[in-house]
Amino acid sequence: MYEMGRAELAAVRKVIESGQTFRYRGGEGGWCDQFEAGLSKRIGVKHAVTTSSGTAALVCGLVGLGVGPGDEVIIPAYTFMASAIAPLAAGAIPVIAEVDETLSLDPKDLERKITPYTRVIMPVYMLGRPCNMDAILAIARKHNLLVCEDACQAMGGAYHGRPLGSLGHIGTFSFNHFKIIACGEGGALVTDDLRVYDRALIHHDGGCVFRKHADKLSHPFFTGSNYRASEFQGAILCAQLGRLDGILKRLRARREVMSRVLAKAKAFRLTPDNDAEGDCGTTLGLLFDTVTEAQAFVESQKSTGLEMFRPIDSGRHVYSNWEPILSRQGSHHPSLNPYNWAKREITYSKDMCPATLDILSRTVCISVPYKLSLAQARSVAKKMVS
Image (cartoon, rainbow, N blue to C red; front, side, top):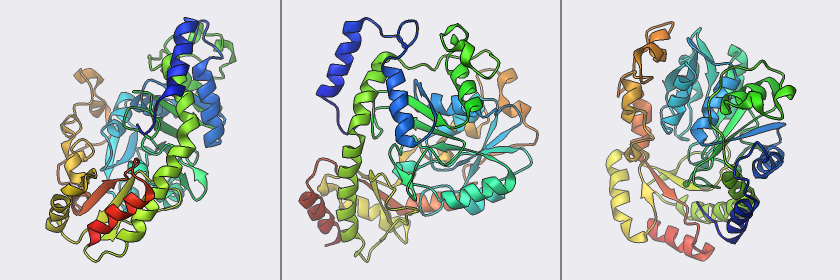
């Protein structure tokens, strides 16, 4: 969370004073609806659904796409485990592919992982960094696959001028405490496909059949769940969406001045970008020749006060630490475990993506110092290369 203050307080106050905290049964046209309209306009798509979390957005998105038992969803080896949890929640199987030096899905390994059962490709924009979407979309078209963009860490990012979340069949976002805009916990999915939208809307709200919009849906009702957002979340997100451009401008400016300095270093090189202009600017990546050099650099820079880490040390974002996935425990009950419905034998191991483990071990990520002035950010960067 980068900024939050009076605008959010005023919006939440209005929710409390209205007495309408639920988005339906009197809340129609309220804060969640307003946020969805603003988000749709921002991303350039027709439909949006606010959800209770980014994970919920992924689950509802995959359900919207018609994913189910026997299907496979290809995800990167570097992402939060939610990218693997979501396919399982829809009854499908996550297939894990390597990332390349950009820290995003490696198109070459992606294509190697495609089987007759692959249904969806899920590119993840980790650290606000765009993937090689030209290559990924070409592969999807070649194999007649669907694309679900996991843009949970990349709200406001772009790829060659197109907003992230608008390139695939569906886009998903997270608004939890650690994201670019935040409401504590929340998410959203966006799409241009009415059928996908209707299915996602039904799944996100088990009471959809009772809502005012029930007779407008183009898809038959099925039993959904409850991934709804409240008017509190919608109110905060409306205020946060108004801050987005300012947040991105500040992040990108600091990333730019630091990049110019760090690019001159001889001890490392900047991690390659698939689209530097579309990068959200939250993080700078440095790539070292050896693991030892990366470790030593992190240790030597503690006095800078910057948040600095090797991705391999983030734990929850590295596939080798996803114990429930590696052990194929896809549900609380064996009869509901999607691995028992798979059309082929699915195996995982901690060393199955060696390129990813190597890259994550030799990369150092620096959280862009949002609160520093441009001069201070430049000065800190100079100390790193002195």
